[in-house]
Length: 434
Image (tube, rainbow, N blue to C red; front, top):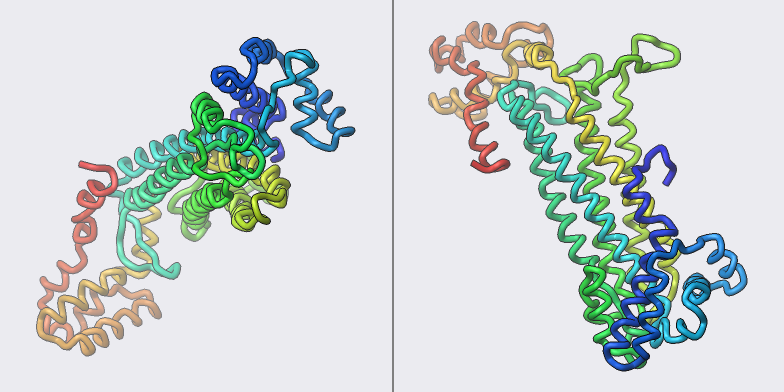
């Protein structure tokens, strides 16, 4: 991923240096286990650990790979250069390349998951704070982009919190599912390596043994992992779209923070554009773009092929680095987001009283009017408000069919905003707990 959309901790997980360090640890722990089982001499296993503080030379490994055309063999050759050929002769005993590659990938994905989990926790904290801050800040709810009924800005933040809380659970589940390792040898039968070696390596790396690997770890696990990243990305876009809508000039109920010295347009100095949330919309497309290739990686030939390999070399770093950046950016947007309660009220009253139409409809039916007649009575008065910007309550009071069923006081009480917020506390308790 390009540096513009990268953060250093996540980038470091995917560096060549980190990858080769994990490969080394897999091989060294496997040697320890084989020595414990009496398969190789203890001194050879101990000799491998002489390289524990070595900075593996990426350029040298690439140089060897240019000849061998095999990345794992190139690494093992370089390792022997540090440990000594005789001392390293039992390294990789009974193992196959996928034991190293797949176990390493899952270590990287679990580390990436840990960062993403922390990102989600930070975003949740920001959403909760803003939800509580604007718990009773009235705004109009919209369906199909059209005014519906009153809600609160706090409920908007709360529903995003609940969605991201579900995503946190999904991410934890995805981490658990991907945290497996395999040291099972060619076609996964353990013919040339004891299963206890796998158990030891996995224990040392914080993984659990893959129950059955066919030389590769089953890719349905990876598909589920990247699918989870895609769902989280879609939730980010869900929030970003709402903020972009709120910042529209004719809405302006909320906006991204505009810092001192920031410029909105090279041509129009007045512009304050929702550039961060537009950027998030774009970034989430890239994360979701990894999902279909991950799904297609599930179907491999027989016990293994490498059609998945080139895909994962790209989507592993790109999807996790991009999502890490996007979550951090969204947290910053939520933390600093500007809210304009006065504009929310003004927008809601653009067609005075119109959003109370359902209350009037229900009151008429409760007063004995058929639903069909009640709907026609309310709608004809509502359409006058749409067309002439009159006051809905005044239109109702002037309609003899309405006043025959409802008294002026009964009509008046149907325009109490508090009616729509009476269960906010209940919803908040469901989302955030008592």
